[in-house]
Image (tube, rainbow over all chains, first blue to last red; front, side, top):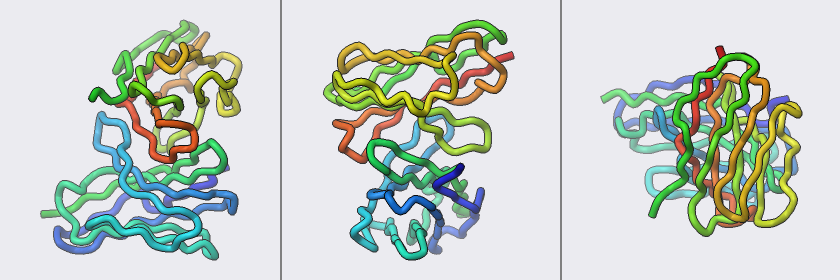
Length: 110
Length: 114
């Protein structure tokens, strides 16, 4: 049973435009939400997080939005750069366990 | 400032053989996690260790899977009598404590069972 879902396996965006990656979850007990970025042949690296008590967290070009009533999480990247091309995973924490989505492959076209 | 390392990076084994995967976490990190990613799937939690506490093994898919950790250092994940469905990338991550939400991942071990 997939508790965290990323329904878009891939996304292409023009350089300079906004990239929006989406994530849906089912477990209302999740208290932290995270985004990880993964390049080929490397492990995921932490990008940004948000606590369940907040609805927005911003770090430079990256902003994460949380809509608890819709159980929906999104990552906005603006402006998108070619180096942002990677697979993005959303993850959620309940207790001491983390649940990951299947990832969205972002391609930023120069 | 070494990150999380895993070995081997790639492992090809025959069905029925045992394999052992190794993870070296970041020094000082008391929490260590094992995940696996099968083709087209998200990261699937397998097991985590926190200091000297009993590990949470609730994610291990069968009794063919086991893991050990020596104190707060190296961990090994052992898969006995490998099956083709065990083919996946096995990822290890560590964090300062189990309460810390940011995890640092190793590059993974790609296991192929033929």
